[in-house]
Image (cartoon, rainbow, N blue to C red; front, side, top):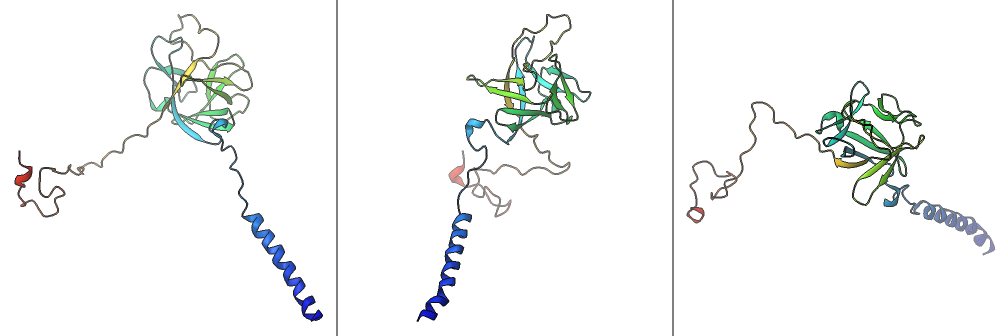
Length: 208
């Protein structure tokens, strides 16, 4: 009996070790930056940044192919931006069409760069109660502001400009040439889905 007991003792130890490993693998771990308080941690959003501060008309932040940053009166492919979180509360802004990052010089001038510079192209994003956002250079501490539409106007007042992030909708798919889309069903017919054939007459129940 003593020999049988000694024989099964190592087996019992292995069972305990295996059970501990299985329980450890099944533990639930929190998802990093999953809290809504961390402001879209790790997420990517496509937005148009609209502002009406110190502008003659409505303006959308636009990053052009030559690297200039201007305010466009209407939404355009150059004003569709990709906002990606670098860490909680800090984002990078990329022009979808031009593949240029929004960056800021130490004097506050905005420009678009093909290369991401963490010092020049990282911005703090502050959410306001009215739905607008304020963006500020993480390194320089300067607010993001669009240049005046006209060089003869007074410079923009100091302080941050408010931007309203408008959802960027994907373009509607175009039908291939020569192919017509399906016609809507005839709800007044006894065969609205045209399953019987064109010879099927209209039902008197649906006649006007």
